[in-house]
Length: 342
Image (cartoon, rainbow, N blue to C red; front, side, top):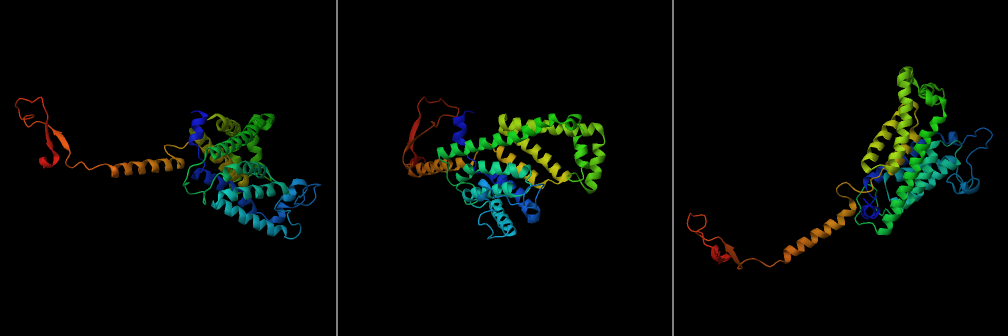
């Protein structure tokens, strides 16, 4: 399908987009809801105590207003904002606020992980898509079609997200070739046994037992590499159907990370980011943007039917009485009024 044909049908205002935004915000909700604010702002190494407010970070939610609000209060406010974002209310406004809160977390806490950094970029790239979403609730269908300029802006933003997310997975997959543990297939064995980031309880016991089998450890390690590279390639070059398969694989992959080493925030952020990147460019069968056109066609059909003249009294051709009776068939057709036939 050509670019113009794709743009003529593209409309991101679908439940898929809403679910992706909700999952993305949920990753940060988990971080703020289940982490003590003091743990996020504790000094690390030779660094001063967080929050960090130098340079552009001065606009962070942790920094605006100085000492007027305590960090714990700001923490709660950001949590409430993220809950509103996840609810789907007014995407046009909450998209900007979501990017600001994400920037604040990634830039001002003491030790952000890969999930916070990825979310900071993805939510920023989502702003054009949110600004062109005029719905009150991102779970509902739109009542009007997008303008051509809005389609172009949103579609360009979608591809910006795809490039970013694909880059993350390709960098992660290719980067593992520089690690001897990944190449030898023993990386997962050591990760599960790590005292700080590894698995715990019965999950650790089961995981270590499974990873103690060399063939299984090798398969898991190289399976991760292949999966990450494949997902990156599919996001950039695949069809909508292949992207759905890639999204399903990513969900399984990151749920496994949650179960084994408990990286909830990172996993939810990446699932939400991949869900946005895998948003189908064209609807399956029909889409929200087709609804106005269908309704208009139905209205025109109904009006034409109501405005058609009545048929009563108009002549109608009927077969000759001799036809079908075994007699000689007449070459002419009998013409009688419809009222006379009754």
